[in-house]
Length: 462
Image (cartoon, rainbow, N blue to C red; front, side, top):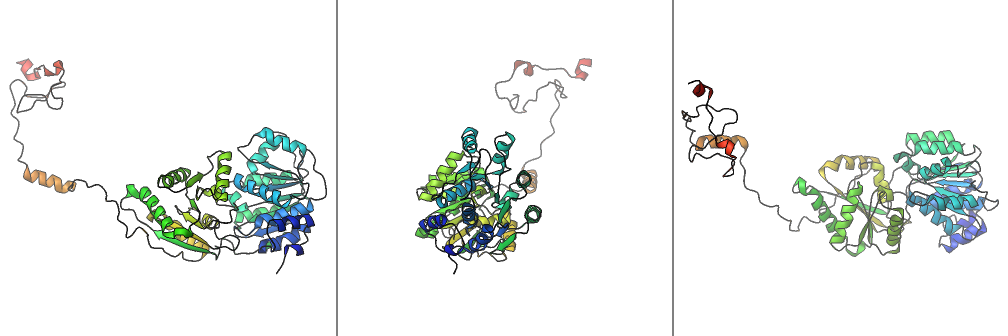
């Protein structure tokens, strides 16, 4: 079995890896690091949770050990699709480069431009950024990319999903054509393949797992659920989620709960807290400081449940997640693979459960087609529990039946007798009851002018 010491890494990097507790590289690391150290372009295809981040940070640190950074001209560039993933890459860099003098800067939204400009002005060896914020700095004239020696694109398929491909192509064109490119993705969509053919030069391709496969360490299950009434579906789904959590017992030490919409993330987190579950939301509309604080609490174990949109589905390195609950079936089948990949990491066992309502069955079919296996059906844990009965409504008859019964039961209205004073209705005239000669529909509060009698045309003529 290959060891890190056999990959040709710098001794200082190896020492930091040992301090982090790692001895044996994952397949993607063992396959990508040697050609990267040789200066070759690398195309890495591996499912999430296989250690792709170390596949490029370790050889980058080794190759950048010699040289000096210049102001506004980073020596290497790492592009990540989300703020959280970019921050995670920065954390990995700090861990593995702690015994070197290399510097870094993190360019993400939600942070002051002034602070980021100050870092860039001093010169950095490694620039880690999201595409949008990187181009913002470039267009403001605060950044030059002509000194980039190594460029990394991480989670390229997520970049495609988020619409970043035009930005990625522009950034490629701003960097020297002599750069070395390390390109990583979980899947190879046609658009991703086009980019690699355009911007990578004879890359070493490392594919350690079939595209869009799920880990064998993850036990999967889906509950097919139909609400008692359509207007109660959301509430009953939240009750079912709590029942699934309870059915897992102590085995569910912590979990990520995925929802399709940001508003649903907030509602589910609020509901869980209401019933005594320690939960917090994370999605793109929250402040960056709040998102990082929530993630830190989840990593530290102070937070048990993380309710997330797909912003947290890719690349986040939280190794001890016992469960993933898909409150909503993802509308894109690939997202299912990335969501459940948050559990069962680094060889550990994990469990992923999903709630599927009738409208989502088409998405479930697409997922099973992608992963080429049927997701086992799980019995509804609420099946034997007493359900809240909907409020009784007065029985209502079908319209047709009601009308026919009304016609048969009610006596036919007698023709109204014409009075000499008001034989024909006229505009502005009042309608009076046959019984008490009072205006119907307004009670006692009738304007005086409506009580006046009007002569009909015939009466006026007489």
